[in-house]
Structure formats: C-alpha cells, structure tokens
Length: 414
Image (tube, rainbow, N blue to C red):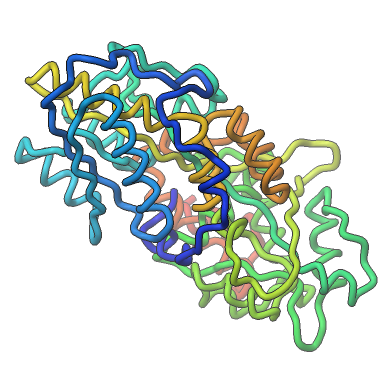
C-alpha cells in the first residue's frame, strides 16, 4: 500500500529516551518468536542484511538489533541501508543471483514478487512460525501458503485531531461513530481560518487511495468492487465534506503533503499513519480516533501494510539456516516495541502491540484495527488499476459535480 513517497513523509525523529529502558536482548524471549531455531554451528558465517528505511533512529536501531543477534549467534553481519528504488534493486539482485542473505520486504509488492520467482527461503523449515500474531498479520508473510517472510511491523491508519480546535468550538472530544457524524463534526470545526478536515485527493502518488480505503472498508465495501454500495457511500462522504465546506475543493491538488495543512493548524482533522504517533514536531496537543462507519453499530475496518524480513534461498544450507536464525532473533518482542516507540510503526506481535499502547496511548485505534484488517496485496496487480479508478471517481464526484454512483461507474468503464 505505502509508496516510497509515503515513507519519505516520515520525519527524522530524535530518540525518545526508551532505549535504556528497553533492553535489546533480541534473542532472550518475547512472543512466539524469541529464540532462534538453531544457536550454534554458525561460527565463521558472514551475512549481508538489506534495509530500505533510511530515517533515524530506525536504521540505527536495526543495525544494532542485527549486530547484537549476530554476536550471540556467532555470525558476522554487514547491515546496509539501500536508498533509491529499492524494489528495482531487489529484483536486479535476484536476477543476478546476488540477493542479500536477509532483506526487509514490503508485503504488498516486494515479497510476492520475489517469492513468485523462487528466490526466498521457506522460513517454516527453520522453526519459524506465526505464533503471537493476529491472522491478518500472519498472512502478510505468506505467498501461496508458504511463509517467506516474518512480519516485524505493520502500518494502518486512524483519524488525528487537534484538541485546541475542539476546545475553541466548544465540542467534546468524542469520536464520530458514523459518516454523517463525521460530516457534522467537520462542519462544526470549520472556521474562516481552519477547515474541518484535510485529506489527499491527488492522483499518481498513491496517497489518495491509501487514505480512502479505510472509509470504503468501513462502509462494508470490497475494494475489488469499485461500483458497489460501500464504494458509493465512501465517495459520497468525500462529496458531502466538500459540499458543506469542511474539506477544501483544493484537496484534489494535495497528496502526502496534505498533512502539512493539519500540522500548520489549517485543518482540525486528518487521516494519517502511525509515524505521527511519535512525531515530536507537531506544535499542538492532539488525539486519535478510529474511523467512523457508514451505518451505526458497525465496526471500522482498515487496510494493512506489513514489513517482513525474508531470507534468500541459498545453495549453502548453513548460510540459509543462519539467515533464518538471525531473522527470528531480530523479531523479538523487545525489538518490536523499541522500533514502534522510536520509529512510529505498529509491532507485529500482539504482546508488543499491548506494550506499545501502554507507552503511547494514542496508538490504541491503530492497534485495535489490526485484527481483521484488509490486505490489498491479495488484489495483486489489479490494485494498480483500481486505485486510479477510485481517485478519478473521487475527483469527478467532489469537484466535477457527478453523483458518487455515476462517477464510480464512469471511472470503472461501466
């Protein structure tokens, strides 16, 4: 789901003082994935690890985790952060039979692309399983029912709000339960200097469909059905927000940078990911809400992006086993909590999610939505076509004046 552009929206964050409190005992326990299947016989093995997330403290933390684990396992490890087009680099390395021994992989594109080529190892043969993970997360690391990647962190989405805007409007900080509630709330928060809500509406950078999907899903929609009732209700929500003046018609020109409208207090509400949970640069007090649903009494649903570590299928059985052991060690509960608190991701392990919410209470809507979340990777390459159809329909309905139904039918060619 998330594009490179999205990940670049993450700010370089200072450490928040928890490194000392959270011991990085990566192989000492936690969840169902704490100790490697094999802890000896790796002396002299040298492994290369690739990571694609280049902001601090994330990349520094990953380097430490892997080096600590390697030391315990008797492995020599070279941890590298790859910049630029990471997917292309992975595919080129796979084609040249030079894939790194361990690589961080996105679950929407990179894992299925590499797994389909037969260049990733089946991690289950090394005692790695998905105990301690919600089913929605466990499935992120599999391709055709084989575990090729161990999830360590996920991203989903929630509504962020400015507490001062609620106080100024004399409105209690109560989460909107339905789409109608959200339209009314956003209207009440709209002033001459502040819109009620800001959302991306541009095509091309991937932001609009990512933040639209939770509304579609929370309306009971199927992302594969762009003219279904759920899609219509979600597009109607955007149309109603523009119609009552709480969402600027200029939103069709904004992408990932739309968050700047919120952080600069030009909008009271927005949708964003977990990276803002640990963003110390936001200049006001804020809170989070779960998504509303189209109808009262239903449960919200979000889309989920995962990150897994995969091991290269290797003719050297000892190196492949060592890579699997290193991955299992890296996925400890302690490491996942530390990455979440300092790096702004949701831990994959449910036990680590609980600890994360204890430390960062605003993470609760994110964590609550993980179980049962939707994985758009199941749509395969079809999603590339569908997401542009949704963008076209949103724009046609909100600024083009069409009904939501007509806009969706036109965008999908029906």
